Image (cartoon, rainbow, N blue to C red; front, side, top):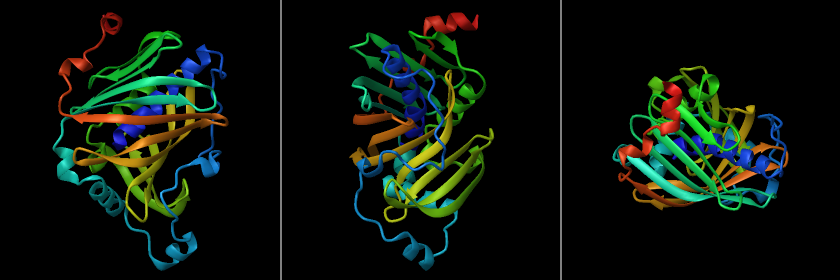
Length: 287
């Protein structure tokens, strides 16, 4: 599910932000949010239970290597065998721009060989936005910008984050993985792990010290609006088949700009390969 947190956080937040802009709810360009800034959500973030005091735990143990933190995470969500046992995923949910009264329906699809498709529909606004990657071409369609072939940083981002087995953190896809510190994130005591993709892109992931689960992620995300520092908080884990998945993802785009994704269903291994075919309008751009 880590891959879907990244993709839904990056693409989903951007498309919902565009929809909000269409409705005149928020400005088009989101102000950047410093990765070091405290969460404006504060106590509203879900807390599973109290964690031990940071200073007590930090003094009692050394930092584990990133590979160990990741291995524990893999076991916490179901194990490597369960993750590798699937070749495609589809899910549904809702996406809301908190405080703006704008809610959309979300469908997301992913498959091995690094394919992904995100569809967000806003019935009240008459808007549907699609973002996809077929393993070679990244693309996007929406009423504001039309049909686009993703390029540059936008393309590299979707390439990096469309790894279907990204929960496994395949070392061959990264320049480095390092546990930086033990710190609090979303009210939990976590290990902060710095990941540097082979492309040079950087991401910080936070893993719960107590239960090993992924609590959230920070990264620079790219869209047509530009680059924005984004924080995503993952919670409300539920069992879908043989894998534990966070069903609530809260994403901070900037002060007063918070997106919440709620996942209602996930199914495995029944996505038609044609789902990832390029739309005719995108194919026309490639000619």
